[in-house]
Image (cartoon, rainbow, N blue to C red; front, side, top):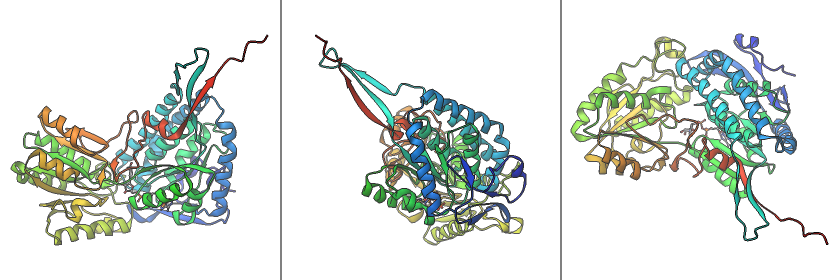
Amino acid sequence: MVASPSRTETAAAAETYGNYIAGEWRPAASGATMENRSPADRDELVGHFAASGREDVEAAIAAADEAFRTWRLTSPIARANFLHKAANILEARIPDVGRELTREEGKTLKEGIGETTRAVQILRYFAGEAQQPSGEHYPSANPQTLLYTVREPLGVVAIITPWNFPIAIPAWKIAPALAFGNTVVFKPASLTPLTAVRLVEALAEAGLPAGVLNLVTGSAAEVGDLLTNDPRVVAISFTGSNAVGAELRQTAAKRGAKLQLELGGKNPAIVLADADLDHALGQVVAGAMMSTGQKCTATSRAIVDRRIADRFTDMLAERIGSLKVGNPLQADVQIGPLIDEPAAERVASEVAAASQAGASLLVGGDRLGGDLGRGAFVAPALLGEVAADSRLGQEELFGPVLGVIPVDGLDEAIAVANGVRFGLSASLFTRDLGRALAFAQQIEAGVVHVNSETAGAEPQVPFGGMKGSSSYSREQGKAARDFFTQSKTVYIDPPPAQA
Ligand code: NAP
């Protein structure tokens, strides 16, 4: 039996962490483990984690199924209290958990701490949401009838998350799932299991009853199908790639499971000639490069009015070329590594291919050596004169790469922005209110910004994409209740009067 990973154990470089099933931390039934290494330095071992298989998935689903019988009947106020307690526990650990997140995922320390802080805010937000009204009262044709609707939980929910927001995304799925009375089997990305352990620890220590939340680490090849095909799992909330999303669509459709998909993006920032270019510069570079460009909402296309395209491109090249790349735990570093070696190789070769295909490589794109040679580092890249229909103009690269597409005015800019299969987020930079309103109306994106970067999501508003970026559902805000509950309509008539 693996002990619950404790705060003191985290100081050690390479602890072994178990699954959390039926209220216990335990190793994989097979005893197998998988190792996790820092993307900033492959010699740095983050930890060993349970490499789960059939028995573990089965135990987790069985525990969640059993726990649902009572959890669904608990008061939403009690559920809110668990989330509040978990938020307080996690809040006290923000510096440690944020640092571990950075070590494991590679975003800067500021971002690691920021994301952990955000997870605390999300837990608190959904503690509040649990206490909001969850149904409606209706008039009936029969004046005696009490007619109302109530939102009820779904049952056992599978939550499958990516590595790029290893605590915020699990928090914004798990918190509403629990708040609204579901039980959870959580399978985090294999590249970021430690952050998942830390989130589950906070919720477990808050006193959640056994089986309400279960964590199963391990590769998708071993556990993915077992989890998503099990008929006891009535809903799947997934964030990740379009390729896996497409598979899950089929899996869920075949057996009628409720499905929520949040997928990739190819997010545009349109810069018009009347924009405040210094402001636009800071926002576009932040949107493209923070978190090493590995946000689903990252800016990957700067669609720039031709009248200012050369000037703005020069400004971009200078700023991007001066970004400090390095060990993300160092305070002055702005850009950390990509998530792993294959990702770094892929991004470097995509940049080279785009340059060969006709775009002009203005800065970056090379693998970095020296001290950074043991990590997955690529110099942030800017490419100019990118063709809107080229691979770089169409496909998500998921790295620190920005392409500039010159256009003639707002109409062409919107047509180019909309001319991709994705529709997650989009920005416009202008001083013209009329153009801002036209953009907000015509852009095909689930999250729209005017004069701010494409990334960023506050917990109280819906989040999600249009077209290929999502499955039409939304996460966070009041929208979370739509996915994690179902509606029941109740007619109550008085019994006939007794003679
Ligand atoms: P991914 O490869 O699709 O993996 C996401 C999660 O799914 C991981 O936990 C993975 O497990 C699991 N998985 C893989 N194959 C599976 C299968 N057949 N059945 C069940 N689970 C399976 O995506 P990623 O590389 O981690 O994340 C990057 C992608 O996520 C990008 O496209 C990005 O745009 C997107 N994203 C979207 C949003 C949004 O809100 N729209 C937010 C963040 C990221 P393993 O780790 O074990 O493979």
